[in-house]
Length: 299
Image (cartoon, rainbow, N blue to C red; front, side, top):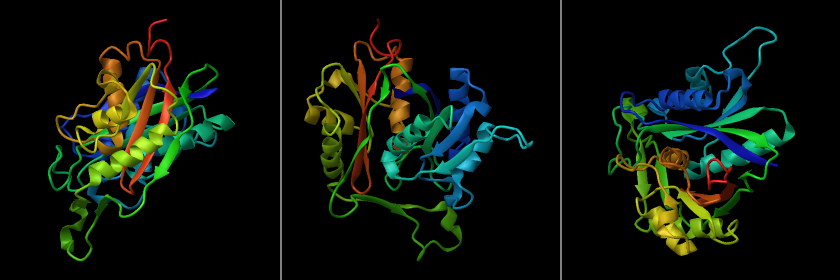
């Protein structure tokens, strides 16, 4: 038994800067690709961090659920969809996969939708910049239980020591009347190396050998996935990344890379994907995903 990716939806256009709209679009696309009705989604988990206008309430997951048109029926016997935010920076998607696995294993939901993506709270930017190194994008992984020998294995997490390496906050002392459109991001000079160190530890917690393994990693720097691959002994041509033209998609990096690989013809002869994410904390998470035959190597 495993937890399989039924489909992945993405939203990367620059006609909107809203993380809610991008999340809703990605969610709708994932359902369309899988041929799943909205009422078949039992749980929606939002792993995004940077929100439209620094929204605090309501939960952004509820706003994305509405934008996606999921669970909007209110009659007595209509199906219900439960949604919530799970915020843990770049590792949030893998943390959400871990939660989704527990839900799906109980049989209490047919499908779980993991939505992720970020935006600058001012809603005036699309591309990453020096003061806010994250691009605007949205993604959605539609997950379901399978009895086939495929899907996610256990999620292994690692917490580093010392200062956070990366942190983002609203500076309440200086925000004034425009605080809903401001965000301060601080990255320590050695942040990339510290994230790499915890990412290697997380990956080695699930990686037995590198034979047939492709790598998808978070992208705090453009070189990060290749540096991680080198540390793990994975060949460079086994590394799959999202489009980084406009910068780091942060919480959406893993799903965007997976979707891009599928759009490019799949994973070739690889039979497994090693998903690794590392971010503020410093913290990292990793999981091995056994590919279905139609997605990975030809039968």
